[in-house]
Image (cartoon, rainbow, N blue to C red; front, side, top):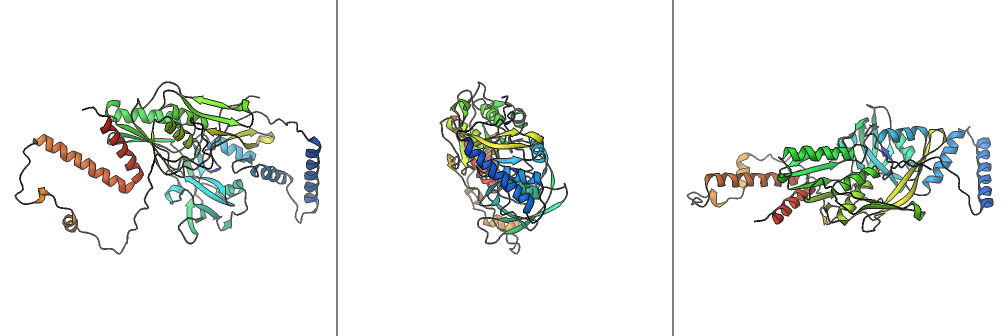
Length: 450
């Protein structure tokens, strides 16, 4: 049976690339107790006929059977389910990195839809949807008791149309409504930028575009800084990255490793186990690496983080990751439908499974809540700001000048102080990122030979 090497490493998305390991036609297997199974199938047939004949309203036979199939699959775990022809087509379209939706990666928990993470630059992210939020209602309709696919269907609609979702958030006494406008979601899988001499690689998802985007981002950033010798390190930002294609997670890990195992998958049958190893070639050329994660970093993100952490190639900073350590196989069925079935667990190079546990950072750094600004508070004048600023020796009238430094040296010192002030300002915008960049700077200072 021919298999195409893709793996599903994340939950159902509202307009996000779902990841697949496509297998051939579904083959029925013999069972040790065929009589018992056939009896149960007869029971199913009896119930099906009773519902068709006696239910208070006429039912759609196809929908009834699909619901029964989906019920069987969803009873196994949160990530196994049935994909109708429409859902399967959407999934294949989403792996391209462009699709319509809200931009929320979701899973199911406690009967409600739980947000794994919003996608950068999407309506969900701009509206302030956060990882860990629970979606309890869609346009006033409760999602309690619905399957995940049914809840996702409620949230889909024409681009430009409005939708109201009700959010329950930890720390908030009451649920609240958020109005979103559906949009076409185009994901740039990798966004690269430079912060002083540090290359920051923001990876939002693991789609077909991720590894090529990573290569391009590194190349352009290194050229911008005037060559690899001027780069002091790399920050890989995997926060709120819900996962994606297994082969892309392997390729991204391999980009920073020269050798060793990246990940292994183990299924029910030992012969289905696989190991994936790194090949020579480090795109970072040995420069320090920091990986940023949080509770929205799931699946493929955790594969990359676990591989770099276990090989001591990167320092992991942030908060504990989501903890999805399973692999789903998407198997095409008749009628252009498919089933997504959990078929394996994956393990980091040290042999650990992160299922339900997540990856713990080497350095735990919480992201502070933004300060609440009182709109009625008086605005501070420049004079008041200057008066509040701490005074130094240089502010004292008649203070002695520094005779040990030239004008050029003093100018260079002032530039360094300005950079430090800019770094301090960055902490207000993104404390975790600022912390990661500071670690890179610290490693550079320690490694620099006198």
